[in-house]
Image 1: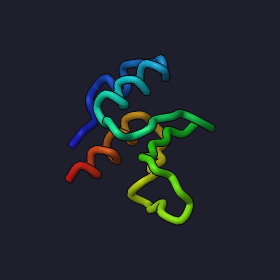
Image 2: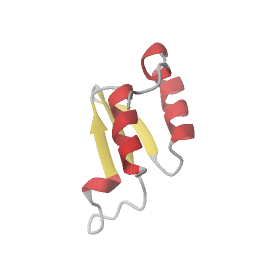
Image 3: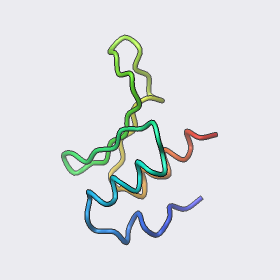
Length: 71
């Protein structure tokens, strides 16, 4: 699978965050420190697993990582 073109065509990170949130409801999307992050609540330290938090260097890679969580 490839990420949709909008993951690289949109330059405004706020717009990208909005599109990712719409595509993956239930996930919190953020950009920090040059990376893209997604997490799904609740984020209690004793219950967080790798499946609850995803980090990627780009919006496109975050899209692909989150898409894999759907199956």
